[in-house]
Image (cartoon, rainbow over all chains, first blue to last red; front, side):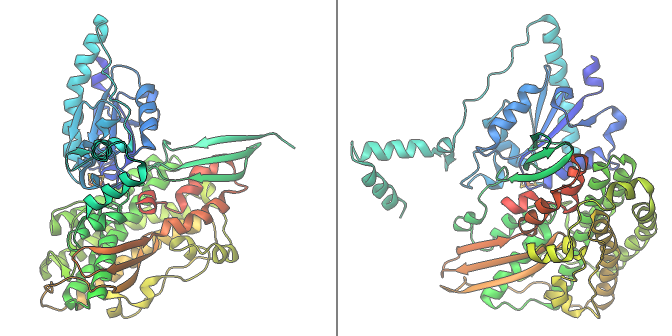
Length: 194
Length: 362
Ligand code: SF4
Protein backbone atom coordinates (compact mmCIF):
# COMPACT_ATOMS: atom_id res chain seq x y z
CA UNK A 1 0.00 0.00 0.00
CA UNK A 2 1.41 3.31 -0.94
CA UNK A 3 1.41 6.29 1.37
CA UNK A 4 -1.28 8.10 -0.55
CA UNK A 5 -3.97 5.50 0.05
CA UNK A 6 -3.13 5.30 3.74
CA UNK A 7 -4.09 8.87 4.34
CA UNK A 8 -6.11 10.23 1.44
CA UNK A 9 -7.09 13.87 1.69
CA UNK A 10 -10.45 14.80 0.29
CA UNK A 11 -11.69 17.89 -1.44
CA UNK A 12 -15.41 18.51 -1.36
CA UNK A 13 -17.22 20.63 -3.86
CA UNK A 14 -20.92 21.31 -4.31
CA UNK A 15 -21.60 21.32 -8.03
CA UNK A 16 -25.29 22.23 -7.71
CA UNK A 17 -26.67 19.92 -5.14
CA UNK A 18 -29.49 20.53 -2.72
CA UNK A 19 -27.13 20.41 0.31
CA UNK A 20 -28.55 17.06 1.34
CA UNK A 21 -25.50 15.24 0.06
CA UNK A 22 -23.07 17.89 1.27
CA UNK A 23 -24.15 17.62 4.85
CA UNK A 24 -23.88 13.86 4.59
CA UNK A 25 -20.33 14.18 3.28
CA UNK A 26 -19.57 16.33 6.30
CA UNK A 27 -21.43 13.90 8.56
CA UNK A 28 -19.03 11.18 7.46
CA UNK A 29 -16.13 13.38 8.56
CA UNK A 30 -17.63 14.41 11.89
CA UNK A 31 -18.16 12.30 15.03
CA UNK A 32 -20.74 9.93 13.49
CA UNK A 33 -18.01 7.99 11.68
CA UNK A 34 -15.07 10.24 12.33
CA UNK A 35 -13.10 9.08 9.32
CA UNK A 36 -10.31 11.43 10.33
CA UNK A 37 -9.01 8.73 12.62
CA UNK A 38 -8.19 6.75 9.45
CA UNK A 39 -6.30 9.70 8.08
CA UNK A 40 -9.01 10.92 5.73
CA UNK A 41 -8.83 14.67 6.08
CA UNK A 42 -11.00 17.30 4.51
CA UNK A 43 -8.97 20.00 2.82
CA UNK A 44 -10.03 23.15 1.07
CA UNK A 45 -7.08 23.14 -1.25
CA UNK A 46 -7.29 21.14 -4.48
CA UNK A 47 -3.50 20.91 -4.68
CA UNK A 48 -3.41 18.91 -1.46
CA UNK A 49 -6.30 16.61 -2.29
CA UNK A 50 -6.25 13.05 -3.55
CA UNK A 51 -9.97 12.32 -3.61
CA UNK A 52 -12.48 14.71 -5.12
CA UNK A 53 -15.90 14.28 -3.55
CA UNK A 54 -18.36 16.04 -5.73
CA UNK A 55 -22.09 16.36 -5.11
CA UNK A 56 -24.96 17.51 -7.24
CA UNK A 57 -25.76 17.77 -10.88
CA UNK A 58 -23.87 20.11 -13.16
CA UNK A 59 -24.98 23.26 -14.93
CA UNK A 60 -23.18 25.25 -17.56
CA UNK A 61 -21.76 27.81 -15.15
CA UNK A 62 -20.18 25.09 -13.04
CA UNK A 63 -18.40 23.18 -15.80
CA UNK A 64 -15.32 25.45 -16.00
CA UNK A 65 -15.03 25.59 -12.21
CA UNK A 66 -15.20 21.84 -11.77
CA UNK A 67 -12.67 21.35 -14.55
CA UNK A 68 -10.35 23.89 -12.97
CA UNK A 69 -10.53 22.17 -9.60
CA UNK A 70 -9.96 18.81 -11.25
CA UNK A 71 -6.97 20.05 -13.19
CA UNK A 72 -5.43 21.64 -10.10
CA UNK A 73 -5.43 18.32 -8.30
CA UNK A 74 -2.20 16.39 -8.76
CA UNK A 75 -2.06 12.83 -10.08
CA UNK A 76 -2.86 10.27 -8.83
CA UNK A 77 -6.40 11.44 -8.11
CA UNK A 78 -9.82 9.91 -7.85
CA UNK A 79 -13.21 11.48 -8.48
CA UNK A 80 -16.15 10.21 -6.46
CA UNK A 81 -19.63 11.31 -7.51
CA UNK A 82 -21.74 11.49 -4.33
CA UNK A 83 -25.48 11.19 -4.63
CA UNK A 84 -27.75 10.27 -7.46
CA UNK A 85 -27.64 13.84 -8.75
CA UNK A 86 -23.91 13.62 -9.24
CA UNK A 87 -24.24 10.17 -10.83
CA UNK A 88 -26.91 10.89 -13.40
CA UNK A 89 -28.63 14.19 -12.74
CA UNK A 90 -31.19 12.49 -10.51
CA UNK A 91 -34.39 14.33 -9.71
CA UNK A 92 -33.07 17.43 -11.43
CA UNK A 93 -32.39 15.66 -14.70
CA UNK A 94 -35.31 17.24 -16.49
CA UNK A 95 -34.68 20.76 -15.21
CA UNK A 96 -33.83 23.20 -17.95
CA UNK A 97 -30.60 24.32 -16.35
CA UNK A 98 -29.16 20.91 -15.54
CA UNK A 99 -26.79 19.19 -17.93
CA UNK A 100 -26.66 15.87 -16.13
CA UNK A 101 -24.30 14.05 -13.82
CA UNK A 102 -20.76 15.10 -13.01
CA UNK A 103 -19.41 12.85 -15.76
CA UNK A 104 -20.50 15.38 -18.36
CA UNK A 105 -17.75 17.66 -17.03
CA UNK A 106 -14.93 15.46 -15.74
CA UNK A 107 -14.11 11.72 -15.77
CA UNK A 108 -15.62 10.00 -12.73
CA UNK A 109 -14.03 6.95 -11.11
CA UNK A 110 -16.53 5.90 -8.45
CA UNK A 111 -20.28 6.46 -8.27
CA UNK A 112 -22.01 6.60 -4.88
CA UNK A 113 -25.78 6.54 -5.36
CA UNK A 114 -28.48 7.59 -2.91
CA UNK A 115 -30.68 10.58 -2.33
CA UNK A 116 -29.41 11.77 0.01
CA UNK A 117 -26.34 9.55 -0.16
CA UNK A 118 -25.77 7.89 3.20
CA UNK A 119 -22.46 8.42 5.00
CA UNK A 120 -21.87 4.65 4.85
CA UNK A 121 -22.12 4.75 1.07
CA UNK A 122 -19.65 7.62 0.92
CA UNK A 123 -17.16 5.71 3.03
CA UNK A 124 -17.61 2.61 0.85
CA UNK A 125 -17.10 4.73 -2.23
CA UNK A 126 -13.95 6.33 -0.86
CA UNK A 127 -12.61 2.89 0.03
CA UNK A 128 -13.35 1.72 -3.51
CA UNK A 129 -11.66 4.90 -4.69
CA UNK A 130 -8.53 3.99 -2.75
CA UNK A 131 -8.18 0.90 -4.92
CA UNK A 132 -8.25 3.10 -7.99
CA UNK A 133 -5.80 5.48 -6.35
CA UNK A 134 -3.48 2.56 -5.67
CA UNK A 135 -3.61 1.41 -9.31
CA UNK A 136 -3.01 4.91 -10.55
CA UNK A 137 -0.04 5.50 -8.28
CA UNK A 138 1.50 2.18 -9.39
CA UNK A 139 1.09 3.28 -13.00
CA UNK A 140 2.49 6.69 -12.16
CA UNK A 141 5.60 5.10 -10.68
CA UNK A 142 6.14 3.13 -13.86
CA UNK A 143 5.57 6.32 -15.79
CA UNK A 144 2.63 4.80 -17.63
CA UNK A 145 -0.22 6.80 -16.19
CA UNK A 146 -2.32 8.29 -18.93
CA UNK A 147 -4.79 10.90 -17.75
CA UNK A 148 -8.30 9.95 -18.77
CA UNK A 149 -9.75 11.92 -21.59
CA UNK A 150 -11.99 14.83 -20.71
CA UNK A 151 -15.54 14.49 -21.86
CA UNK A 152 -16.43 16.86 -24.70
CA UNK A 153 -17.33 20.31 -23.42
CA UNK A 154 -21.05 20.13 -22.80
CA UNK A 155 -23.52 22.86 -23.50
CA UNK A 156 -27.17 23.26 -22.72
CA UNK A 157 -27.98 22.28 -26.29
CA UNK A 158 -26.42 18.84 -25.70
CA UNK A 159 -28.79 18.09 -22.89
CA UNK A 160 -30.69 14.82 -23.14
CA UNK A 161 -34.44 15.02 -22.77
CA UNK A 162 -36.21 11.66 -22.82
CA UNK A 163 -33.28 9.98 -24.46
CA UNK A 164 -32.93 12.53 -27.21
CA UNK A 165 -30.49 15.37 -27.49
CA UNK A 166 -32.04 18.81 -27.58
CA UNK A 167 -29.65 19.85 -30.33
CA UNK A 168 -30.59 16.75 -32.38
CA UNK A 169 -34.25 17.59 -32.05
CA UNK A 170 -33.46 21.00 -33.39
CA UNK A 171 -31.43 19.61 -36.24
CA UNK A 172 -34.28 17.27 -37.17
CA UNK A 173 -36.70 20.13 -36.99
CA UNK A 174 -34.55 22.18 -39.28
CA UNK A 175 -34.16 19.25 -41.68
CA UNK A 176 -37.93 18.75 -41.62
CA UNK A 177 -38.47 22.38 -42.38
CA UNK A 178 -35.93 22.27 -45.22
CA UNK A 179 -33.88 25.38 -45.56
CA UNK A 180 -36.74 27.39 -44.12
CA UNK A 181 -36.09 30.59 -42.18
CA UNK A 182 -35.80 30.29 -38.42
CA UNK A 183 -39.24 31.65 -37.62
CA UNK A 184 -40.95 28.73 -39.31
CA UNK A 185 -38.67 26.27 -37.50
CA UNK A 186 -39.79 27.69 -34.21
CA UNK A 187 -43.38 27.39 -35.35
CA UNK A 188 -43.00 23.68 -36.27
CA UNK A 189 -41.33 22.82 -33.02
CA UNK A 190 -44.00 24.51 -30.95
CA UNK A 191 -46.80 22.73 -32.83
CA UNK A 192 -45.02 19.42 -32.30
CA UNK A 193 -44.94 20.05 -28.59
CA UNK A 194 -48.67 20.55 -28.51
CA UNK B 1 -5.75 56.99 -0.75
CA UNK B 2 -4.59 53.44 -0.76
CA UNK B 3 -4.88 51.41 -3.89
CA UNK B 4 -7.93 49.34 -4.36
CA UNK B 5 -7.69 45.65 -5.07
CA UNK B 6 -10.35 43.19 -6.04
CA UNK B 7 -10.18 39.84 -4.34
CA UNK B 8 -12.36 37.05 -5.70
CA UNK B 9 -13.99 35.00 -2.95
CA UNK B 10 -15.44 31.64 -3.89
CA UNK B 11 -17.14 29.80 -5.52
CA UNK B 12 -14.92 27.15 -3.98
CA UNK B 13 -13.80 28.23 -0.53
CA UNK B 14 -13.07 26.17 2.58
CA UNK B 15 -15.63 27.94 4.76
CA UNK B 16 -18.34 27.86 2.16
CA UNK B 17 -20.23 24.62 1.96
CA UNK B 18 -21.97 25.98 -1.09
CA UNK B 19 -20.74 27.88 -4.11
CA UNK B 20 -21.35 31.60 -4.11
CA UNK B 21 -19.00 34.13 -5.55
CA UNK B 22 -18.14 37.55 -4.14
CA UNK B 23 -15.88 40.16 -5.63
CA UNK B 24 -14.42 41.98 -2.66
CA UNK B 25 -13.14 45.47 -3.34
CA UNK B 26 -10.41 45.97 -0.76
CA UNK B 27 -8.60 49.07 0.41
CA UNK B 28 -5.77 48.13 2.74
CA UNK B 29 -7.44 45.41 4.76
CA UNK B 30 -10.92 46.91 4.70
CA UNK B 31 -13.71 45.79 2.45
CA UNK B 32 -15.13 48.75 0.55
CA UNK B 33 -17.69 46.88 -1.43
CA UNK B 34 -18.80 43.31 -1.97
CA UNK B 35 -20.35 42.35 -5.26
CA UNK B 36 -22.14 39.00 -5.11
CA UNK B 37 -22.60 36.66 -8.03
CA UNK B 38 -25.11 33.86 -7.77
CA UNK B 39 -26.34 31.26 -10.21
CA UNK B 40 -24.01 28.35 -9.57
CA UNK B 41 -26.74 26.13 -8.19
CA UNK B 42 -29.61 27.27 -10.34
CA UNK B 43 -31.44 24.20 -11.58
CA UNK B 44 -34.85 25.51 -12.59
CA UNK B 45 -37.00 23.63 -10.11
CA UNK B 46 -39.97 25.95 -10.27
CA UNK B 47 -40.51 25.08 -13.90
CA UNK B 48 -40.54 21.40 -13.09
CA UNK B 49 -44.17 21.77 -11.91
CA UNK B 50 -45.08 21.46 -15.56
CA UNK B 51 -43.63 17.96 -15.68
CA UNK B 52 -44.58 16.54 -12.28
CA UNK B 53 -48.12 16.34 -11.00
CA UNK B 54 -48.94 18.27 -7.86
CA UNK B 55 -48.71 15.23 -5.60
CA UNK B 56 -45.28 14.08 -6.70
CA UNK B 57 -43.94 17.64 -6.73
CA UNK B 58 -43.79 17.44 -2.94
CA UNK B 59 -40.68 15.30 -3.36
CA UNK B 60 -39.13 17.90 -5.62
CA UNK B 61 -39.77 20.75 -3.17
CA UNK B 62 -37.97 18.74 -0.54
CA UNK B 63 -34.92 18.71 -2.74
CA UNK B 64 -34.81 22.47 -3.09
CA UNK B 65 -32.59 22.38 -0.06
CA UNK B 66 -31.42 19.43 1.98
CA UNK B 67 -31.18 21.39 5.22
CA UNK B 68 -34.61 22.98 5.17
CA UNK B 69 -36.10 20.03 3.27
CA UNK B 70 -38.93 19.48 5.67
CA UNK B 71 -39.92 23.15 5.73
CA UNK B 72 -40.15 23.39 1.97
CA UNK B 73 -42.32 20.33 1.59
CA UNK B 74 -44.47 21.62 4.42
CA UNK B 75 -44.85 25.04 2.81
CA UNK B 76 -45.72 23.49 -0.53
CA UNK B 77 -48.28 21.14 1.02
CA UNK B 78 -49.89 23.98 2.96
CA UNK B 79 -50.17 26.02 -0.23
CA UNK B 80 -51.82 23.19 -2.15
CA UNK B 81 -54.13 22.52 0.77
CA UNK B 82 -55.19 26.16 0.70
CA UNK B 83 -55.60 25.93 -3.07
CA UNK B 84 -57.92 22.93 -2.86
CA UNK B 85 -59.49 23.70 0.53
CA UNK B 86 -58.28 20.48 2.13
CA UNK B 87 -58.84 20.05 5.85
CA UNK B 88 -55.78 18.53 7.52
CA UNK B 89 -56.41 16.28 10.55
CA UNK B 90 -55.17 17.86 13.81
CA UNK B 91 -52.80 15.01 14.65
CA UNK B 92 -51.03 15.60 11.33
CA UNK B 93 -50.72 19.31 12.17
CA UNK B 94 -49.09 18.48 15.47
CA UNK B 95 -46.71 15.98 13.90
CA UNK B 96 -45.74 18.54 11.29
CA UNK B 97 -44.83 21.05 13.97
CA UNK B 98 -42.79 18.44 15.82
CA UNK B 99 -40.78 17.54 12.71
CA UNK B 100 -40.44 21.14 11.70
CA UNK B 101 -39.02 22.11 15.07
CA UNK B 102 -36.70 19.10 15.02
CA UNK B 103 -35.49 20.31 11.62
CA UNK B 104 -34.86 23.71 13.13
CA UNK B 105 -32.76 22.18 15.89
CA UNK B 106 -30.79 20.19 13.35
CA UNK B 107 -30.32 23.19 11.10
CA UNK B 108 -29.22 25.52 13.90
CA UNK B 109 -26.80 23.00 15.35
CA UNK B 110 -25.38 22.43 11.89
CA UNK B 111 -24.96 26.15 11.45
CA UNK B 112 -23.36 26.64 14.86
CA UNK B 113 -20.89 23.92 13.95
CA UNK B 114 -20.08 25.51 10.60
CA UNK B 115 -19.61 28.87 12.30
CA UNK B 116 -17.22 27.36 14.82
CA UNK B 117 -15.33 25.80 11.93
CA UNK B 118 -15.32 29.21 10.24
CA UNK B 119 -13.36 30.79 13.05
CA UNK B 120 -11.15 27.78 13.49
CA UNK B 121 -12.67 26.22 16.60
CA UNK B 122 -12.56 22.66 15.34
CA UNK B 123 -13.50 21.08 18.64
CA UNK B 124 -16.68 23.07 18.97
CA UNK B 125 -17.59 22.19 15.39
CA UNK B 126 -17.31 18.49 16.13
CA UNK B 127 -19.31 18.78 19.35
CA UNK B 128 -22.17 20.58 17.62
CA UNK B 129 -22.29 17.96 14.91
CA UNK B 130 -22.14 15.17 17.43
CA UNK B 131 -25.18 16.56 19.18
CA UNK B 132 -26.94 17.03 15.89
CA UNK B 133 -26.66 13.32 15.12
CA UNK B 134 -29.17 12.65 17.91
CA UNK B 135 -31.78 14.62 16.01
CA UNK B 136 -30.94 12.79 12.81
CA UNK B 137 -31.37 9.52 14.71
CA UNK B 138 -34.88 10.64 15.63
CA UNK B 139 -35.58 11.36 11.97
CA UNK B 140 -34.22 8.00 10.95
CA UNK B 141 -36.22 6.18 13.57
CA UNK B 142 -39.50 7.93 12.75
CA UNK B 143 -39.28 8.15 8.96
CA UNK B 144 -36.34 6.11 7.70
CA UNK B 145 -34.46 9.05 6.19
CA UNK B 146 -31.70 11.10 7.70
CA UNK B 147 -31.81 14.44 5.95
CA UNK B 148 -34.48 14.10 3.28
CA UNK B 149 -37.26 12.10 4.78
CA UNK B 150 -40.47 12.67 2.82
CA UNK B 151 -42.72 12.88 5.85
CA UNK B 152 -45.22 15.46 4.60
CA UNK B 153 -47.65 15.00 1.81
CA UNK B 154 -50.57 17.03 0.52
CA UNK B 155 -53.38 16.36 3.01
CA UNK B 156 -51.36 15.27 6.02
CA UNK B 157 -48.26 13.30 6.88
CA UNK B 158 -46.99 9.97 5.57
CA UNK B 159 -45.84 8.47 8.83
CA UNK B 160 -47.36 8.39 12.26
CA UNK B 161 -45.29 8.45 15.43
CA UNK B 162 -46.72 6.39 18.27
CA UNK B 163 -47.36 8.25 21.51
CA UNK B 164 -44.75 6.12 23.20
CA UNK B 165 -42.14 7.13 20.62
CA UNK B 166 -43.14 10.76 21.04
CA UNK B 167 -42.40 10.55 24.73
CA UNK B 168 -39.13 8.87 23.82
CA UNK B 169 -38.27 11.84 21.61
CA UNK B 170 -38.89 14.20 24.51
CA UNK B 171 -36.57 12.15 26.71
CA UNK B 172 -33.84 12.25 24.05
CA UNK B 173 -34.24 16.01 23.76
CA UNK B 174 -34.14 16.44 27.52
CA UNK B 175 -30.86 14.53 27.62
CA UNK B 176 -29.56 16.64 24.79
CA UNK B 177 -30.47 19.81 26.59
CA UNK B 178 -27.95 19.22 29.36
CA UNK B 179 -25.12 18.68 26.93
CA UNK B 180 -26.34 21.57 24.87
CA UNK B 181 -26.09 23.93 27.85
CA UNK B 182 -22.35 23.26 27.93
CA UNK B 183 -22.03 24.19 24.27
CA UNK B 184 -24.17 27.23 24.85
CA UNK B 185 -21.88 28.38 27.60
CA UNK B 186 -18.94 28.17 25.22
CA UNK B 187 -20.73 30.22 22.60
CA UNK B 188 -21.85 32.70 25.21
CA UNK B 189 -18.70 33.20 27.21
CA UNK B 190 -15.64 31.76 25.50
CA UNK B 191 -13.07 34.42 24.82
CA UNK B 192 -12.09 33.22 21.36
CA UNK B 193 -15.74 33.07 20.27
CA UNK B 194 -16.44 36.54 21.60
CA UNK B 195 -13.35 38.09 20.07
CA UNK B 196 -14.27 36.76 16.63
CA UNK B 197 -17.96 37.64 16.72
CA UNK B 198 -18.52 40.69 18.90
CA UNK B 199 -19.06 43.82 16.88
CA UNK B 200 -18.61 41.98 13.56
CA UNK B 201 -21.04 42.70 10.75
CA UNK B 202 -23.28 45.18 12.51
CA UNK B 203 -26.69 45.74 10.96
CA UNK B 204 -28.64 48.32 12.92
CA UNK B 205 -32.36 48.16 13.51
CA UNK B 206 -33.05 50.94 10.98
CA UNK B 207 -30.94 49.27 8.32
CA UNK B 208 -32.53 45.90 9.03
CA UNK B 209 -35.93 47.43 8.35
CA UNK B 210 -34.65 49.24 5.29
CA UNK B 211 -33.22 46.06 3.75
CA UNK B 212 -36.19 44.00 4.88
CA UNK B 213 -34.11 41.13 6.15
CA UNK B 214 -35.82 38.16 7.80
CA UNK B 215 -35.31 35.35 10.26
CA UNK B 216 -32.65 35.27 12.99
CA UNK B 217 -30.84 38.00 11.06
CA UNK B 218 -33.60 40.52 11.74
CA UNK B 219 -34.39 39.18 15.20
CA UNK B 220 -30.77 39.79 16.15
CA UNK B 221 -31.31 43.44 15.18
CA UNK B 222 -34.07 43.81 17.73
CA UNK B 223 -37.17 43.21 15.61
CA UNK B 224 -39.49 40.42 16.78
CA UNK B 225 -40.41 39.22 13.30
CA UNK B 226 -41.39 35.57 13.32
CA UNK B 227 -44.10 33.98 11.21
CA UNK B 228 -44.77 31.41 13.90
CA UNK B 229 -46.38 34.30 15.76
CA UNK B 230 -49.33 34.13 13.38
CA UNK B 231 -50.11 30.59 14.45
CA UNK B 232 -50.17 28.92 11.04
CA UNK B 233 -50.82 25.20 10.95
CA UNK B 234 -50.19 23.54 14.29
CA UNK B 235 -48.58 26.63 15.81
CA UNK B 236 -52.07 27.92 16.59
CA UNK B 237 -52.34 25.28 19.29
CA UNK B 238 -49.39 26.69 21.21
CA UNK B 239 -50.19 28.33 24.50
CA UNK B 240 -47.86 31.19 23.98
CA UNK B 241 -45.13 32.06 21.55
CA UNK B 242 -42.51 34.70 22.08
CA UNK B 243 -39.85 35.15 19.37
CA UNK B 244 -36.23 35.18 20.51
CA UNK B 245 -34.84 38.68 20.04
CA UNK B 246 -31.53 40.34 20.71
CA UNK B 247 -30.62 44.01 20.52
CA UNK B 248 -26.91 43.71 19.89
CA UNK B 249 -27.17 43.70 16.07
CA UNK B 250 -23.80 41.96 15.55
CA UNK B 251 -22.56 38.50 14.63
CA UNK B 252 -22.62 37.32 18.20
CA UNK B 253 -26.24 38.38 18.59
CA UNK B 254 -27.17 36.29 15.55
CA UNK B 255 -25.36 33.38 17.06
CA UNK B 256 -27.17 33.80 20.36
CA UNK B 257 -30.58 34.12 18.74
CA UNK B 258 -30.11 30.81 16.97
CA UNK B 259 -28.64 29.18 20.03
CA UNK B 260 -31.61 30.20 22.16
CA UNK B 261 -34.04 29.14 19.46
CA UNK B 262 -32.82 25.59 19.85
CA UNK B 263 -33.98 25.63 23.48
CA UNK B 264 -37.24 27.25 22.41
CA UNK B 265 -37.81 24.51 19.83
CA UNK B 266 -37.27 21.85 22.46
CA UNK B 267 -39.95 23.52 24.59
CA UNK B 268 -42.33 23.72 21.64
CA UNK B 269 -41.88 20.01 20.93
CA UNK B 270 -42.52 19.20 24.58
CA UNK B 271 -45.71 21.21 24.58
CA UNK B 272 -46.86 19.66 21.32
CA UNK B 273 -46.21 16.12 22.57
CA UNK B 274 -48.18 16.78 25.74
CA UNK B 275 -51.18 18.02 23.77
CA UNK B 276 -51.22 15.82 20.67
CA UNK B 277 -54.68 14.41 19.90
CA UNK B 278 -55.27 10.90 18.57
CA UNK B 279 -56.81 10.29 15.19
CA UNK B 280 -56.22 10.25 11.46
CA UNK B 281 -53.00 11.53 9.94
CA UNK B 282 -54.01 11.92 6.32
CA UNK B 283 -56.97 13.31 4.40
CA UNK B 284 -57.41 11.73 0.99
CA UNK B 285 -57.03 14.42 -1.63
CA UNK B 286 -58.94 13.90 -4.86
CA UNK B 287 -59.21 15.94 -8.03
CA UNK B 288 -56.93 18.71 -9.15
CA UNK B 289 -56.61 22.41 -8.38
CA UNK B 290 -59.32 24.43 -10.16
CA UNK B 291 -58.47 26.55 -13.18
CA UNK B 292 -57.27 29.99 -12.13
CA UNK B 293 -57.22 29.20 -8.42
CA UNK B 294 -54.39 30.83 -6.52
CA UNK B 295 -53.02 30.38 -3.04
CA UNK B 296 -50.16 31.64 -0.95
CA UNK B 297 -48.70 30.57 2.34
CA UNK B 298 -45.92 31.72 4.61
CA UNK B 299 -43.71 29.74 6.86
CA UNK B 300 -40.89 30.33 9.30
CA UNK B 301 -37.91 28.35 8.08
CA UNK B 302 -34.80 28.03 10.22
CA UNK B 303 -33.37 30.86 8.13
CA UNK B 304 -36.42 33.09 8.10
CA UNK B 305 -39.65 33.67 6.33
CA UNK B 306 -40.44 31.67 3.21
CA UNK B 307 -43.25 32.59 0.91
CA UNK B 308 -45.02 30.12 -1.39
CA UNK B 309 -47.36 30.81 -4.26
CA UNK B 310 -49.21 28.32 -6.42
CA UNK B 311 -51.63 28.69 -9.29
CA UNK B 312 -53.77 25.88 -10.65
CA UNK B 313 -55.03 25.35 -14.19
CA UNK B 314 -57.61 22.60 -13.83
CA UNK B 315 -55.19 19.77 -14.58
CA UNK B 316 -53.07 17.81 -12.17
CA UNK B 317 -50.10 19.94 -13.17
CA UNK B 318 -49.81 23.36 -11.60
CA UNK B 319 -49.70 26.43 -13.79
CA UNK B 320 -47.08 28.18 -11.69
CA UNK B 321 -45.27 27.63 -8.45
CA UNK B 322 -43.05 30.20 -6.85
CA UNK B 323 -41.02 30.43 -3.68
CA UNK B 324 -39.36 33.39 -2.09
CA UNK B 325 -36.71 32.07 0.22
CA UNK B 326 -35.13 33.77 3.23
CA UNK B 327 -31.58 33.95 1.94
CA UNK B 328 -32.51 35.78 -1.24
CA UNK B 329 -33.91 38.55 0.96
CA UNK B 330 -30.98 38.47 3.34
CA UNK B 331 -28.24 38.81 0.72
CA UNK B 332 -28.61 42.63 0.34
CA UNK B 333 -28.39 42.99 4.13
CA UNK B 334 -25.30 40.79 4.13
CA UNK B 335 -23.65 42.82 1.38
CA UNK B 336 -24.32 45.94 3.44
CA UNK B 337 -22.93 44.38 6.61
CA UNK B 338 -19.78 43.41 4.69
CA UNK B 339 -18.94 46.99 3.82
CA UNK B 340 -16.20 48.31 6.04
CA UNK B 341 -15.35 45.01 7.70
CA UNK B 342 -11.89 43.45 7.83
CA UNK B 343 -10.94 40.97 5.16
CA UNK B 344 -10.42 38.33 7.83
CA UNK B 345 -14.00 38.78 9.04
CA UNK B 346 -15.57 38.26 5.63
CA UNK B 347 -16.15 34.50 6.03
CA UNK B 348 -17.73 35.00 9.45
CA UNK B 349 -19.90 37.79 8.16
CA UNK B 350 -21.18 35.57 5.40
CA UNK B 351 -21.74 32.67 7.76
CA UNK B 352 -23.67 34.63 10.37
CA UNK B 353 -26.59 35.19 8.03
CA UNK B 354 -26.66 31.41 7.50
CA UNK B 355 -26.84 31.59 3.73
CA UNK B 356 -28.58 28.76 1.97
CA UNK B 357 -27.63 29.19 -1.64
CA UNK B 358 -29.50 26.23 -2.99
CA UNK B 359 -32.76 27.66 -1.61
CA UNK B 360 -31.96 31.01 -3.13
CA UNK B 361 -31.22 29.74 -6.60
CA UNK B 362 -33.39 26.65 -6.76
S1 SF4 C 1 -28.91 13.23 -4.61
FE1 SF4 C 1 -30.70 13.98 -3.48
S2 SF4 C 1 -29.88 14.78 -1.58
FE2 SF4 C 1 -28.17 14.59 -2.99
S3 SF4 C 1 -27.98 16.58 -3.97
FE3 SF4 C 1 -29.31 15.33 -5.25
S4 SF4 C 1 -31.38 15.79 -4.59
FE4 SF4 C 1 -29.99 16.49 -2.99
